[in-house]
Amino acid sequence: MGQLFARRALGDGPSRPDLVASGKLDGALVDWAFYRDGHRDHRINSYTEALGRAKRGQGFVWIGLFQPTDHQLAIIGAEFGLHALALEDASEAHQRPKLERYDDTLFAVLKTVSYVPHQDLTATSEVVATGEVMVFCGPGFVVTVRHGEHSELTGLRQDLEAEPERLAVGPGIVLHAIADHVVDRYLEVAAAVQADMDLIESEMFTPRGWRNIDRVYQLKREVLELKRAVAPLTGPMRALSTLRHPLITDETRNYFRDVDDHLLRVKEQVISFDELLSSILQAGLAQVQVSENEDMRRISSWVAILAVPTMIAGIYGMNFDYMPELRTKYGYFVVLGVMLVACTGLHRLFKRNHWL
Image (cartoon, rainbow, N blue to C red; front, side, top):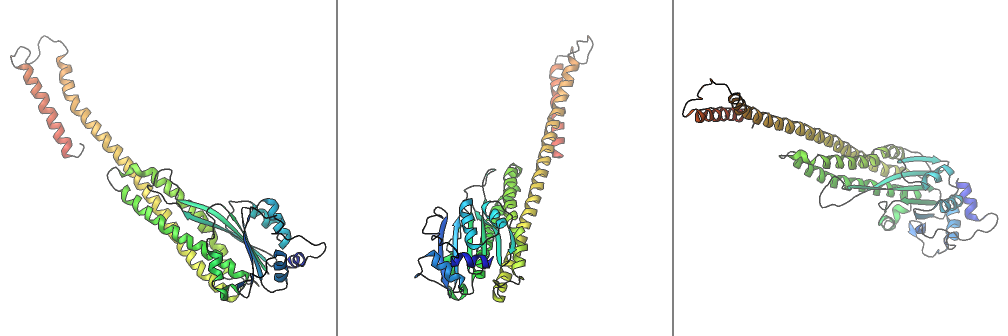
């Protein structure tokens, strides 16, 4: 791959037009620059010249793209000799985080996440939004391909340019900076989700808190979205922290070990979120069952209370000639008193047993 990139950059064969100046990357190109000794070389305005210098080992080119077309990716692939399978993955969003090696080129897929602020958590609230960053890292070049509005690498290039001693390490340090930026965002989002979880947990264990069960389910779905971004990345980060590759120096491996440590911490946090939400969801379902049982006991109690006067009235409605108190002057009131005493006694009994 590196040899193919070298031939393209030298312009072997027919002369090739400047890729940037020709406008072939218009609409997708975010920024590009040539870096030498850790500094952005502003004297080089020609993309073709930058590629030539990168080939000769005088520095490296870093080009950033946002949602390029398949045709634009094909042009970039031909320019740097990128593998067709990697280009196919880069053209399609919703890829699983991974790290692949094609000869001397590394291809990494990272899922980015962003916390979506909301006034109140509802059953339809979006809490975690995701995007993707694909990184091609090879001798003399770095190509980043972003998908989704929440895949921004805001300020990353400027931060690295402010540390020329780090940027001088080469393309491998750019890959680390991107991975570190993505994992730091994981930590920020996890902290924001923690606040939502504390709120929903406190509300769930209030009277009638089970009415919030749909909000718990929605938050669980959002946490699963975060989990799908974090968990699969642990393998690639562990590989980068131990990988023997010309682009990954011993110092860079130490940096990747630090990122791997942060990633493991946020992974454990997200897993605990999922487990806690499952427990809260089960507690909510248990509350629903308890509430239904209480409602059934109340209904049954009132049915039992009303059954007494219904029974007595039913007996006196049978039209017999000889029944107690029929000829008594106060018989009607006596029967009403019996009904009242019986109903009051049942009500006090059910109240004492917490059925009412």
